[in-house]
Length: 214
Image (cartoon, rainbow, N blue to C red; front, side, top):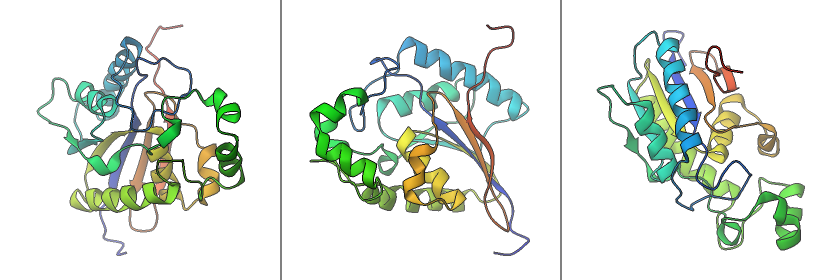
């Protein structure tokens, strides 16, 4: 890569909380809308981003085609002359038979899958769903294409915890088995810059708090 390569900035966001509440669940391809709390989380993030970008806006914003992701992108662009683009390939992992299950219930209901995930999440396949590698194969080429299309600009992606971890791990060169260690809270912001040498993580899992809130 040439040292003349312009810096591209990715604002990588996780969607807000859904109507199922804050308890960790395997939502995957289950298509749920944001809750009132989730909308508030993203409205708060929108105000933070306007200050962060000094009242500017990203060159583009992308989401998956799932409601929680699309609604997050819609809220982030309210009042701007920017329309989000939904991309099917940026969906969360398909959890198959685990869809909708509480994470705390998985060891009892799906012990073999939990054992495989704990042993090596990178090779685990969810029954009647996707494997981690399959998600990487659809997500990363799409992200690379979108970054190349906006070289030198700032773009936003309002996505999912699993997809965000894949993007963060790719940018940082992390082994797949480490990705589960990367926290991604509802309504969080990650900032990654792609420059002439290597990507840099400027911000990770940041959730803004309103000034004066307790």
